[in-house]
Image (cartoon, rainbow, N blue to C red; front, side, top):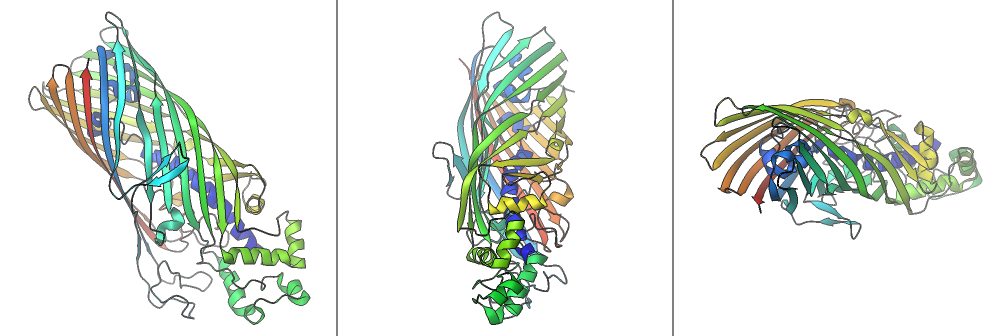
Length: 555
């Protein structure tokens, strides 16, 4: 019975950690909406940097720009995230199978097994954004997220080998909200994830006619916001339901010395725990206003039909701080306080160093040191004919650095006091959450064709590898192995002005069989952290569609 209490609070602490991890995981969808021309070339532009946005893709490319230039980017992104949940044969949690996520029976029909299983679907209603000035999320009407104009400027003084520039762009910007009754709310009812580079002083230097080098410093804003329900369909909570509905049924609401001594106060609450109940809700917001990073690039062009480039993007160290609030359900409060209110239960909790009472809400401050992984990209440009060009890049990202995430809280709580018993490296005010991610390599391909002297057609393809091991996948982060397709068009308006159009789509599908991922559906008595769909088969599908227009001119 003490284990039921520990499982509940440990799971809540793990959910808090996993929620913050979500913000970082979104970086797995990086480079999606930074430059329209790069987007339409499958991001294979290290040897062919796109105008002023060479700041990100290869700052050495700035050296190719002369005079004073300005780029304005307009971007629209639409997110479609779908999850499907179904029960495999012989599905049950400690003998119970009436999970409302997959059971079509009427609720509270007095039967503890499901007679009519269904396939449940989860989708998002629209896009959410975190607004720094009000420190809160805003739900946008259904439809695409539109950003722009995102400006970039560069200047090369007459006769100089140096080109200077700066740009505003979005290395990461995503968010969504679901309906309050959506079955996917245990993996995020409202999420906002942002990294915005608002200033990026950069320089490109032309060493000679063939070689250029460059560097840029990115000054960025990072934010994570999440609202989420919590449940734990685990064997411990299945046993808690057996106690509540069988053993405790004759003693509901009673309290006397004999019951407290024998049952640790577990029969006190009017409403007991169960594996399929919503146990709590979480609301957390964290941000960092200044998060610096740098890019270093080199570009070698020995011939007009061949070029090689490389760029190193540094890790970005971020110290995010913010607030969290955990709102406990009535069943969770009554069970925890019932155990703590009995003599024997209070003694047992005191021995474990755990508070014997929990309020309806727990609030406080939390901080996290997060390092956005470094990356390296290198590639070539080949022009086999005057009109046709092919680009090929290799991309590496150091996600292996994310072995675990560590969080520091401003106070001890029941949740953290219990979590330290289950998570090595954790204390009553510090939580360590394991991830075990892996670094990735992938290729990217781009092609362009000069249809006329003014019009250029473009296409790109990028098969992206997954940094998330198969045993850590979840519907909370549905972008794993992905395919990226893009098309574009460049139009030369006049000798000083270019207009780029582009459309791209990222698609990712995944299947997570029951008991295969301990970040979603693991079963077993020791898998409380965090498996809200324990024992269920899960399918996920994510589609990100991006459209863009860029206006580039010299003045």
